Amino acid sequence: MKDSILTEKAPRPVGPYSQAVRAGGFVFVSGQLPLDPVSGTMPDSVQEQAAQSMRNVGAVLEKAGLSFADVVKTTVFLADIADFPAVNAVYASFFCEPFPARSCFAVKSLPSAAKVEIEVIAAES
Image (cartoon, rainbow, N blue to C red; front, side, top):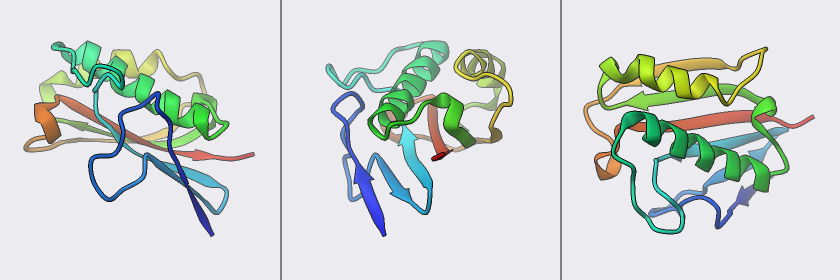
């Protein structure tokens, strides 16, 4: 059985997907772009984009009754791998040890010309 999770505190899905799905004791959060959920705008700098993506992830986790402490795996997508150090610094500010497992990929492009997109998997206790 699976349940969809939706919050107004993160950008609404623009396609046939859920912000997150709860299944089998895990919450799978879809990739979050750095869109402000109220204005629909995106910050310019990669640091601000990373922070907004993480705030969006946090809002979805909160709606699921979880927090960043429950995250076990993350995937970070970057439009430019040269942005890794800047994004990593922002990313690190949202987590405490033990840190989740992580993958990071440079991709050709992201929706809405974003510089970063972040998805997570969280475990329910």
